[in-house]
Image 1 (cartoon, one colour):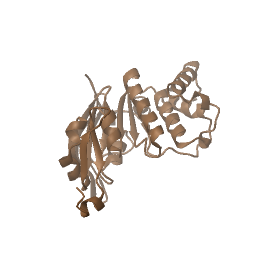
Image 2 (tube, rainbow, N blue to C red):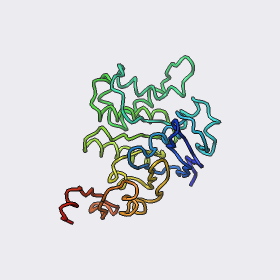
Image 3 (tube, rainbow, N blue to C red):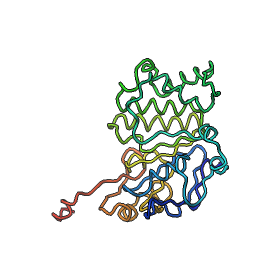
Image 4 (tube, rainbow, N blue to C red):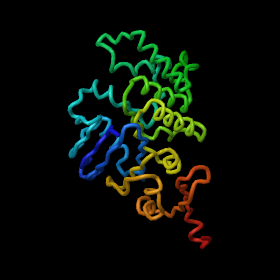
Length: 268
């Protein structure tokens, strides 16, 4: 199996504060790789560096076996698509136009779409089940609809890697599952590598092939969900009491938060 993404000894600072410290890992092609960790652990900074929007102060990043510095902006956009943490809600374009924007890295300077671009746009909307929204304005959609449209735009880029920063954060439970199932389909059917940040440990356990757990800019644990999501590891990373047992639907860890009130009342 080929390596889609490799990070070696990555480091970054904001002012005098270290936000990434000697981060190293690799992601294989076709893998569903999820980055987890408490607030301030460096997850978003890591995503910004591996997507090329932030220059790290130290270390190396390889995209499809090439140093990220060797890519032009347009070439990188043909290899890596990015879905940001908070979908913008004020884009005054029709949904079909927003999805078509994913073709811009493949277009000439005149940015005139070809029949192939239109066909790929329609296929991406069908894959994400937003074709019925094609004539709607993006800024009139719900959060879940906007997220699916932005994933359709990423699909339209025809990249080998999609990087997403907490794509389920603003969504209700049904839309969270819809987005995660969509990403799983994309990985299986289109052989796309998915790299994603998530705060939801149970979603991460259910869908990830491997997890990267960060704290204070460093790696706490890297491995399969049952290797990373243990009581000892999570307590070290999050600083609170969590119960870990087995999900009754799928044989992966299930994480339950234990409220402080139960502990102080000696209920456990």
